[in-house]
Length: 106
Image (cartoon, rainbow, N blue to C red; front, side, top):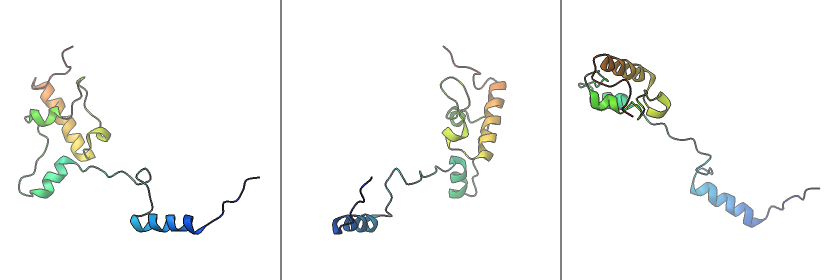
């Protein structure tokens, strides 16, 4: 049979110190912090200058294209769904106007 572990003063003190130092959770148990959408953060900081992903802003759109030329998904880019749709439309529009390539050179 499994032995029952004795609760000693040492064990209790370790738990009390751990709780006093933080919330009692290790870094693996804590939920990861969400990254905010870059476009939403810019909207909040400057309400007069709203920044949206436009097809003419090639430098911004290139951040959301992988090295293979694929559009980076929301989970990896950290963009909200509203702006992800705008980024996708902007990339497709820029590709159609030959501002961005459909695929990268091999």
